[in-house]
Each structure stands twice: as structure tokens, then as C-alpha cells.
Image (cartoon, rainbow, N blue to C red; front, side, top):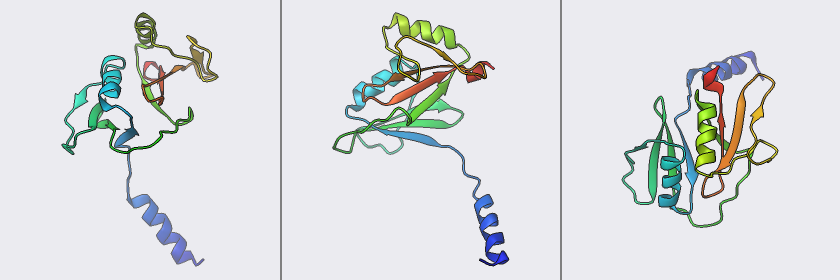
Length: 143
């Protein structure tokens, strides 16, 4: 490959300035899933600009969004390594809130009602939405 090609590739790669916009999840029942994200995680539902039935949008703050989509038929395959990570500076209060609501959570290995503290001091838990998607809630915001 010539040095001209290498230089062009580097310029092209740096010029897009991509940033995170939204996470979309395929869900079985958009009403049930929306209830979870609204009433368990406390996310604010925002206007679904597609105006299509079977889709709900939620704010993740700072212009970031979560889109719940129940338009595609078929099985949803879930894997814990694919997860949505949220952070809070009120981590202990959030864990207590989950306990009061009897919402199950675990650490990464799967031990229920257990909080993991990473080597860097970040605390984290994992829970699942009605479709089985994994959600990490951590204390990064508290640092």
C-alpha cells in the first residue's frame, strides 16, 4: 500500500467525529418494557418522532436516547456481555430502592442481591428488563 493511501485512510477516519446517539432494543411487549424503564429505572419517556405504533423513546440524558421497538417478530437472543450501562451518583439509594421494589439484581458472576466493587472503587450491579436485556447500574458518576 502506498504512503498516499495510508495518509488518506487516516484523514478519512478522523474526519467523521462520530458520537453515541441512542441504543435501540427489540422488545416483545413495548407497553410492559416501557413501564419497566419508566417506573423501575425512572427514565423519562420522550416523543417518538417516528410516530409509529410499537415504538417508545426514553431520554438517557445529554441528548442520548433509548428506543424500545416491538415491530420485529421472532426470538430475542440475550447475552450478559451485551448490556446498557447507566450510572448514578446515588448508587446506594438506587440499590435500596430496588430492594424495596423487590427487583432482582446481581453482580457480574450472577450472585443475587450482591454489589461488585471493582479495583478502581466503582460499584456495579446488573438487572434484567422484561425481555431479559441486561442493564448495568454503576457508581461512575459518584467519582
